[in-house]
Image (cartoon, rainbow, N blue to C red; front, side, top):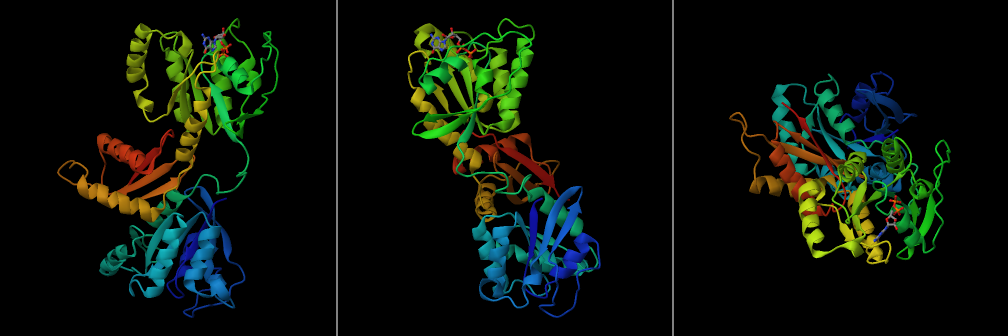
Length: 432
Ligand code: GDP
């Protein structure tokens, strides 16, 4: 379950807010800083998204060293949590301590939602707006005491939560996982043999034989990589009825477990619908992508001319993916797969801090504002990267953004932050 830490100075209303979110009267609230509580983590839920809510107010008593200061507390929280709910007292405004916290959170790169508390009525709304100054993004005006505005704030919190908490089930040193995919006969098995530098005998498998997927660790460019379901790659399905369907299922199972996919295509034949379908499967699965054009040794000038046209026409949707032209038979440029894989994975892994992202977005929008729609100029209030692998972004706006404009943002994100080789997802949250 992802962890949301509630951070803020004493007395800004953290505990009231925790109470409000968990819907219980359990956490003691007193107008005294540092009230003792024995429990600080609560199971919470909003719109069926479950998360663990951590009340850092409980750390105040007796804490020394790092956790003794609010900024230190924020630092701890940021390290431990998947997202931060930063509570500021809007009636007081941003104090030095708040600014120190903002800087710490900014540096942490974790998604932060800013709650401007004690906005009990419309009269206090301008107080909340003043908190844009903190550079955290949009302040959500709330009243922890009365529940005002907390729904919108929780929407924002759940929007920035990763699907699985960071670090869970991940082994940083494990070889990266590659799915080698492509329609039958493009040369997957030949490429695998070339890479493994041994000529394995490919045995035709009879219908009805089942074998479990076997992954193999293969050294490439001086480091190990896991090739997924190498048994599936080496098997021949050509003679089988329904081989297409089976290959599609097998591909999607391999993609489920992969981080990056090499889509192999055969340049000796026109690009087929099935090639494009495999590419789309990779994008939909949200995996990093490398396009490999095999059998380059067969290419003559005429075919080359048509190939370039086919690529422009049929693969424009993935113009961001690195391409390598190889020959599994001769070994030509096979080693170039390594930098391509690394580029794609780097894009796939990238996380941009909320501060950096919003600084960038502000400049972008100032230079090229979103087009007016229905007489209104939609404003982009705030953006956050909700997840990586693949990178996912959420834009909070005051109105609908045209597809063209969203594509423009996506393109610029790729150019300026280098998401080469990775699909990215951009979603929009409209707040009236
Ligand atoms: P798979 O079904 O994708 O695993 O494809 P295979 O590896 O079985 O290859 C299909 C056919 O293409 C075989 O006859 C290979 O010898 C041939 N082939 C594979 N790679 C190349 C290449 O780079 N150049 C040429 N000329 N033929 C290739």
